Image 1 (cartoon, rainbow, N blue to C red):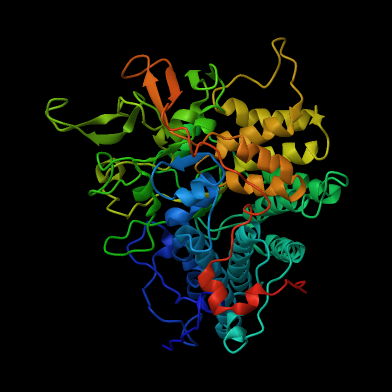
Image 2 (cartoon, rainbow, N blue to C red):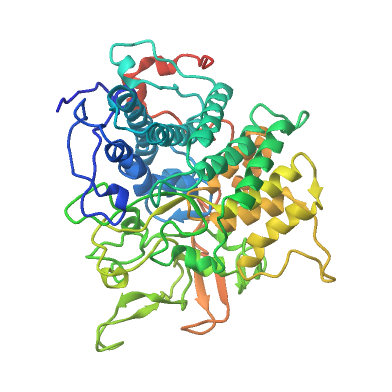
Length: 570
């Protein structure tokens, strides 16, 4: 098979199509190859569908590994790292920042591999390939490309739209495209994709019409604010489109909310009834890049991790994030106290004394002669400890049927869940109004809100409380914390109300604290105190100058035209 070399990351991240053996995902169980396929491939329906397999994991690896939570959660303030990744925590991400570069590189990998897949299918698909399979496979690649561009435009703003990397091999005229024209491009793409994808997945885990419509709801809600101002408000046509697509998914996709929020992250949860799109990771011994390595980065200790990893001991919820949960209330400026009925706290962050029977914890013989027990999150006394990360943490190999090893975990990454459709609908109905009492919007909001264990969003007499932007924003922050999403909610807000976005970020406390349970284990409430000596680096200063991520310096050096003014994409 032919191998092709490429120049640099931006125009040349056309990686080989790689298929993976030994996978739990049926459509990833294909013979391996290390080269770009040529005319000898794509001769059957099975081969054509195999051609899109790597678009579900390998090309997203650099983003998923650390960049997802660095950008999505550290920059947004839902989580922090006490000693590492401080540039993202403190909102001064530079052009040399490692995770800034990793995310940028990964998204253009998705673009490049999607482009090459489309080219190969169109060029090499044999007569035995059915038109429906060809259409579906190309639509999958276009779906992935549009999703990657959504991340690119929201993080870096003006970036080049590339639909054929091979044309760029000898082209030095590449320039960035404007933000509105990128949004036009990806919306147009996703509308066509929604027409071409099947309503039911070709194989479990593959995207469908409903995945595309869910993305369109997301795209239109954000795009409604592009170019808007406090005077003109968000684009009503786009708000209406977001509402329409969200409701179509809710009513007609056959998807449903899981009854218990925590079950969304209890292994094996992959491709469940609520999922609209997931990265499909696979446990693959001896292989790197196809499994979920982020679990190693986020797990607080090797006491609960597979084969000695677990490097997330300094990561956890920010003080601000903990203050968002109902029942955790402020006592003065330096203390939070209480408990919450919101099940999402325990499912997202670990507080001292909380029990997790699905995870095995290594302990000393003095605790248990068997040297292990079901996890009770430890209480580290002192003036600094953390509400460590729980979401996506699935434990040791013995907790998942042997399917885990160092940087090699099997659980998928959610990219879109049905819960988002309910909240998109509510926000689209709210639109440019101060509040809304729309019955359907309130019902949909409540379906997410009450699923968490909270009472209906109503006053003491049971009357619905009008929905506001702040209420919907808070619900999204709590529902999707540690799913790499909160930052993009802030970017969406920033498009039409930058000052409010800055105000939210600058009002967050991201500093050290300690948590004390009233009893241990199984406490009934916690006291959370700001660390008295940690008086600096508690707040950040978001502004027009640092809100958008800088294009990595290595990309500017390799493609100098990226420094030129952006042009409209056709």
